[in-house]
Amino acid sequence: MSTVAAPTAALPIHPDAPSEAFAAVRALFERARFDEPTVARRMNGPNLYGFPRLAEGRRTLAGPVEDANAALIRLFVDCEALEARTVEATCGRAGMEQMAALGLLTEVGDGKLQASVLLTPLEGLWLVSDVPPVRRRLKEGSEPREFVFPPANQLTRQFLDMFTPTPGQRMIELCAGSGIAALRALRGGAAEAWATDLAGRSVQFARFNARLNGLDSMVAVESDAWAAVEGETFDFVCAHPPYVPTLAHEFDYRDGGEDGEQVTRGVIQGLPTHLRPGGRCAITCALSDRRGEPTPQRIRSWLGDAADEFEIVVMRRRDWDVLHAYRNVAGEGAATYRDAERWLRHFDALGIERFALCSFELRRERHTRVPVAEMHAAGTQLDAATIDWRFRWAHHALSQPDALARLAGQTPRVVPGTRLSVQLRADADRDWVTQGSTVDVDWPVGEAVRLPPLGPTLMELCNGTRDVYALLEALRGAGLVEEDVQPLDLARLIELLCTAGALEIPVCPLPPRPREALAGDNTAEWKRAVVGPQDAAAGAGPATDGAASAGASA
Ligand SMILES: C[S@@+](CC[C@H](N)C(=O)[O-])C[C@H]1O[C@@H](n2cnc3c(N)ncnc32)[C@H](O)[C@@H]1O
Picture 1: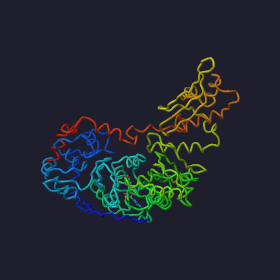
Picture 2: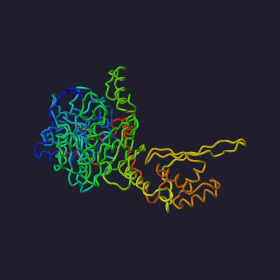
Picture 3: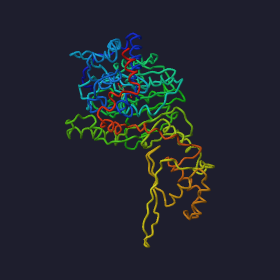
Picture 4: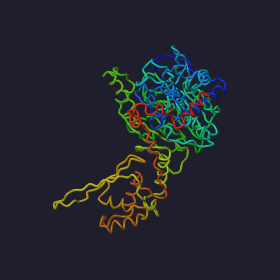
């Protein structure tokens, strides 16, 4: 693979600055309430994932800068230049100098200061990254190859939604960029957290972030996948690797080799060496569908001789075709027919049929004779508890040889949110006859199950009080099943509905539905927010804004 020459940018920030400088800036941010809930509220948005900058059409907080919180938002979130005297008046002279001492601010002429990085409060952390261009993708040669990936985007959020920090663990975030998952883990009580990245620039940014948050114990290492982590083992591994298929490497954060899976493969191939028994690995990235090779089995094959020690569940969030994959890398106007044809031939030679954005988990543990290896369509919401339920249900499904034995003593009940539609047909006497019904769910998976005419009554009877035998008796009593229908037949149907998440049983209950905020995509909410009343929050400020700005300038 070739590498496109890209500018190398000097490091704007100073990760080796004295601890006192980091502590002073931290104190300024705290006094100014430069935190995610306050900033999101002032911008009139749901949170800071996917937030639009002023230059991208946001209209809130566009008025005069009157307090430290607004100044920090304009400088670091919007990346706008501000008069130095405004920064001094709101953040205090010392605050302004301390931010400059860390390399966060630079003079841009006309008495103005501008941020050298994007700095976003997220997940209880402050995180610096490179500043993305406004409203467009990075173009070849326009940014350094090592461009540091901004964490305040929907993909990072979907990645983080798939695991929660576990106190006492030794964890590693590979492909860490800003180091957001490693730092969140340390905040959550991890015994040790490592952040590694191929790009030296990302490693420096992650080190800076660790120090800015007072989490200096984070270990930051420059490493191509596991190359520089020899001899280390972990309880938890996570990665949000680059996954865009490219023939020429342009951006480290984006390009995943000729099939998009090169980095992901490297991460998974290292698990037998680096993941401790009982450990888990959570990855969010695109995977390809290959002719004749189910994705979970293909991933397990990367584990080599240790494959049988691992279980895997893949949740598919959305998918796209090969032409779309080509458009992702071809710049506007560059998509010539000949070029596209070359790409389609390339994908075809690799057996690639489609791509899918997936969140998946590998567990180094085995509960059943055949290790779990499954893939499901994700529903509208997906989180760590949802994928955990998929593992538990898979174990349950493999626990006994037949459905009736597995449902012995179980009393199924309908899961809230399940939708049921009934298909009716007018007969010769113009009476309505039930033809069948469809149950569909949008969580824990996105699925529709076609049922025979007994469907509506069965769903109504499943209220947590009847086992399979009692359900069959009630259906018989209602004249909805023939004499030859056996308990095992009904048990199979009930398990089908449990697998889809329309019914649940006491031995394997569903977790609570994820918070609406975990839907993963805020775009619509942000759209509503940016068309709200002009500058709705500016001036009003956060609830205790007066104290915030007074404190900040003190
Ligand atoms: C999509 S970004 C994810 C950053 C961060 N984890 C997040 O979710 O916001 C992918 C990161 O992988 C890094 N990367 C690319 N190839 C890599 C490799 N072979 N080994 C380790 N890191 C790599 C890039 O430099 C980039 O920082």
